[in-house]
Length: 127
Image (spheres, rainbow, N blue to C red):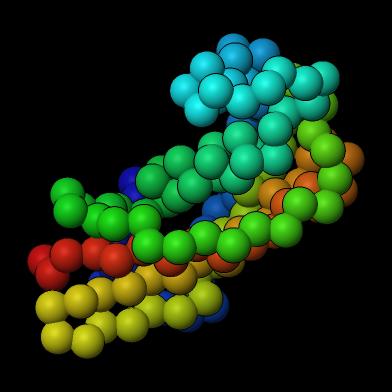
């Protein structure tokens, strides 16, 4: 069950989430964004899938806005690789009706090699 905003505190670590970046996942990404197909998973496809994983970890109410992201890509990921996304709360901020949540993410491959790390910020509506 996803964690609600009120349950989260800076430093909270979510359970790791594993997923496979199959040829079908890559093809869907390439078609959606008009990317060029390569032998490896496009780095932004890995990042986009990781952000999608966040929806499994955090309860995002209707009206949530993805405000920003920053990623560093450290290794190419071959198609059909299983990766693990680890996320933790970096910052939680509430000012009036605005609530912000910044999450740090690390994505590693099957050999536990770090392939990406970054940060994503979302703005959540007042509950």
